[in-house]
Length: 393
Image 1 (cartoon, rainbow, N blue to C red):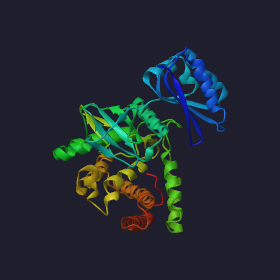
Image 2 (image 1 turned 180 degrees about the vertical axis):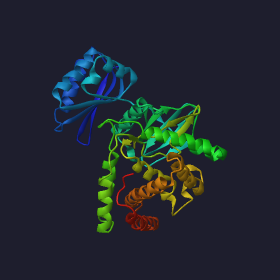
Image 3 (image 1 turned 60 degrees about the vertical axis):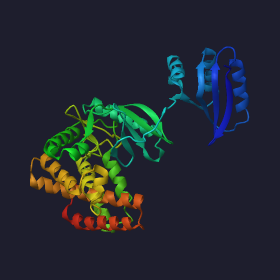
Image 4 (image 1 turned 180 degrees about the horizontal axis):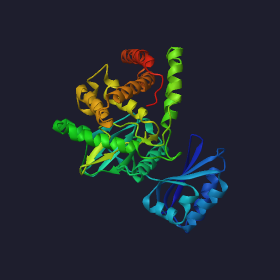
């Protein structure tokens, strides 16, 4: 089957679409065709689309090498496994960006395990889970989460490490192996008598996360993210409230220990009686008060004005998720009521500030839901801010 090459131009990028086999019998012809196709292109970005390329010999590789020397921006996409092995073995994957082709999968009929701000996690077959990403998340974001998963695993936290990237409709997904595991939420839905055992596991894992050291530069800073949240609220709050809130956030220390950032019972699985943490795109380092703020919102704050929301998210009533929040604090701080009260007050302050920003951005100011949530957040902040002078714990 003779090779063919055509071109298309999208977003100031010239794509060379290769089809068939490239070897000594047709390499010169392909080379000349590529030179002709790019002769009148004035842009600087070039991509070789290898979706239909079946084989490439050393003669074909020399074409790519020549292009690499001529062009400032060149990458290869949609590479089959066989062609990728050739490019990898000959060192081309070290010289330029080479992206494998992604298999297309469907999540229709798959069990939803967890839903978060950045994506959803589904059971995919008996052995795997797949995380789909909202808003067509970029491959760089997905690879970054994959790197965070590996880092968390190496640091001793049991987690499902993605091993493949797939196409799910018009977006991407990452696939990880996860055998015989159920989320704590699923366990509590069917076995409420296991509440105490599940909470022990849940709390101990959180303590382990918060005692796991992180080097500077390994993970994002939770404090930097928190400061950005508050900066966005300057026009939303009375100046004295905003100034106090900003200064307190800005003065929180940055212990070099891990926080998960989205630690709820959909994201903690039980596998062979051991906890397993999933959904790593919010992993960072920083003060655990940011973690507790997110946990409070997940179990109490977000559904305060609409308690039925916890049934949609966790499959559990609001009374149960509120109990989870209270029990977690009791176990984490060994029943120290003064410490628990302090943490809860400070977590609420950060939480309602974050919720205010989130509501404005996602729900809007003019919707009925948005008006209710914004008023709720502002009322809580007005009540809570006078109670503390620092968010340090």
